[in-house]
Length: 253
Picture 1 (cartoon, helix red, strand yellow):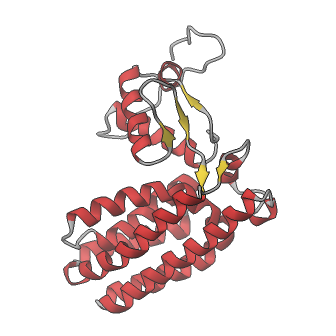
Picture 2 (cartoon, rainbow, N blue to C red):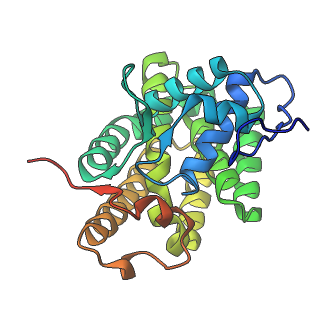
Picture 3 (cartoon, rainbow, N blue to C red):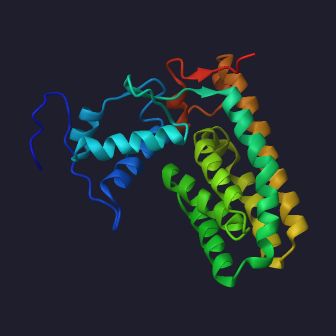
């Protein structure tokens, strides 16, 4: 490991995932740190410092920050240092509104085209969800579960919109996850069973109910956090770090 030439900074030469570019590796590492709350809302993302920390040049870090801005995880102005974005009620409302309107339809359209291989991937994702205690891995696997249900919809614009909306919703999923993990798992099993039966109508209804339950819980708890009611989210909740230090922003009127 190279010695860091700048005092106060760690230099970590992260191993890249097989086949991943430096930018993809940087994106994955930074996204995980933001979603886990290690990087709290308002944290400045200095490209030079992060490049030293990650053991790579500034260019892939710059590209990763741009991608994080597209996901809504950071605010990025070309003339200013990017910062980790605050959570806001208007963001979560819009994201869930989009998903509730589009995702159930996309899933129902995909049902006739789901292969056994597709369903096998969704089953494995569900099994992995039940077996992991790592929050970042849980969120990644959760995306694979839901994405696997609408990927065969034949609607590329819907898929693109949902992929981006899901990425931007991930940071709010923390607010529901810790307390409602068993409830979420039960909903997932019902959704998978409908897909396996080829029941597009039931699948559409179940996905809509699942998203609506998440929307109602997240908005209720986020509102409580805005009112400084910390009992709204369990104290051990890792993502709560992202809410500390003024990281929650109310919706504008």
